[in-house]
Each structure stands twice: as structure tokens, then as C-alpha cells.
Image 1 (cartoon, rainbow, N blue to C red):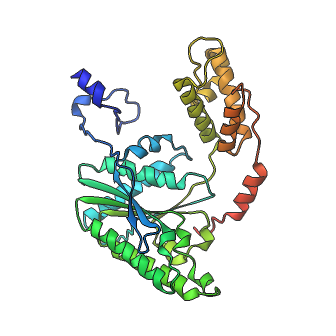
Image 2 (image 1 turned 120 degrees about the vertical axis):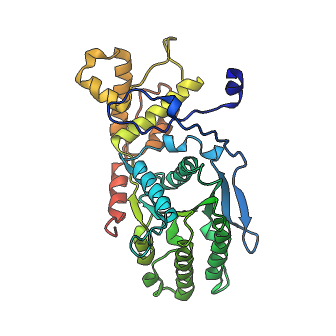
Image 3 (image 1 turned 60 degrees about the horizontal axis):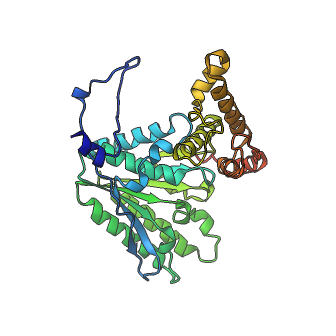
Length: 362
């Protein structure tokens, strides 16, 4: 039996709801769920002119998104807030809560500067929910809409393309055992503010697209097994009617100091694990402390192993200096001694981005 598990079993995940202070879990009372990750990759749905696919489709849980949820680091509570919302939204609609009293559109809007992981968080959330609700739904799908394919060179055709796309999505959600996640990245391209479009050269076509999008989203409210996930880099460009329909609007900003430290730590640990980085003294692999453990050891340095504490402090100094984790990571890879990093601060760029990004619309 153990050899069979070793051959076919890749990951064991525990979802715990433990009371504070609990140290042990009784596995005899646990619910055992066995899932096979889909390796098919995204399937494409061709558009009307066969030049661009109108959407990409994944069967969930997908191998492509395995471990994505755990690897994403944000401010404390953001991921759990999204997870609780989505679970509650599905529960409310499933139990038949009167929408006239408690309205749930099941629309999520993540907004913030580019490159903060909004799209990845949406995909990870869909993957997480597909695992959590696998006993309720026999099939889960992620539909990533290609907004660029919905615009036509022919006047007034774009609104019709949006309607046709959502008709296909509606056919999927009509199967009650199918849980569907619809991802619209950079939603401002489809839900542009209509007031601003009036002053454009061809306002009516843009307005038709927004009207079609809002109408189709309202139609999807009738089905309890669909959640719409959207992202935006330019919140001021989104039509206010779409913003009002979003049940939860979450700001995803640049990583905090703790997140930057943990991101760099996980990257370096991975390179040590696969042997790309090696310990210069030929001993055991160095252990870099977690952020919370490092904070504790800084108050009591004699309780920590000196070399481990030294490496962790160097990484912490690097995380304090950088506001661009990707650039810092590239610097780390290019440097012959990875713990002696020259981290280039881009504080001016971050400050400018923060000024441009408007959070007041919430």
C-alpha cells in the first residue's frame, strides 16, 4: 500500500479548523478527499473570425495552478477574506436567500498597480474553491475571457460578441453540477466608463459593449453556481455601474516588508533545494528563518544559530531596501555571491504609481 501511495500520490493537504491552543488533530474524524489534477492545460474557444480565441478554459483543479495559492503573499487577511466571501456567496444562493433582501451578484473586483498578482490570485482562488467544493460540484471550470477578441472592426458588432460569449457561459452554468469561474482580466477594457465614452469619436459602440456586459452579468445572477472574478489597473476608467455590482472590491498593492522577505526567502530556499545554489562551506543547507521567527530572534540573538541569523538578517535588509521584488530577484541571480546583494531602490517609481492610482472610488 505504501509503495502505491509513493508512486501515485503527489501532495497531501490538510484543511484544519482548530480551536486556539490546539496541538493535535484526530485523523480518524477527518474527511478524506482524493483529487486528480487536470493536466490538459487551457482549451481555447475560437472567436467569430477565427483569429483570436474568445476565452481559455481550464478544468479545475488544474496542475498548472497547483501550489499557486500557497505561494502568493499579500497583506494579512486578504486571501482569507476573498475565500470567505466566495464560500458565503455560493452558500447564500444555494440556500435560496431572497435576493431582494440580501443581494449577491457574486462579482469580485481586484484592483491595484500592475504586477501585484491580481490575475494569479483570481486563478488561485478558483483552484482553491474547486477543491473545497468538490463534494458539491462534480465539475469545476475556469473561463478566462479574452477581452481583445470581443472588439470588432464593424460598428455595433462588439456588443453582439459580448452577448454571444455570455450565452456560451450560460450554457455551462445551466448544468447545476458544474461550478464555473469567469475571469475578466483588465475589465476596464470592457466596462469603460460610459460618461467618458460620450466625448469619444465613436461613443455608441463603447456604450453598447458596457450595456451588453452589465445585462449579461445580471442574467447570470439567476444561477447559483457561477462566480465572476475581475481585475483592473485603472480603476477610474471603470463604469460606476459595474463597480456598484461588485460585491467585494479589494485593493492589491505592492508587497509589504514581510511579504517581500518571505518571497525572497522562498526563492532562495528553492534554489538551494534543487542545487542551483550551494553552501560554500560544504555543510548542511543553510536555514533562513521565517519573518516571524526572525523578529523573535532579533530580541534574543543568543538563542539563534549565528550563521542562520546572519543570513536571515542580510535577507531582511535586502527586503527593506527594495520595493521591486522581481528586480531584486534578478539581481540575486546575477550576483556571484547571492547573499551580498546590491538591491536597487525604486521608491520614486512606487511613489508616483501610488499617486496615480486612485482608491477613492471605493
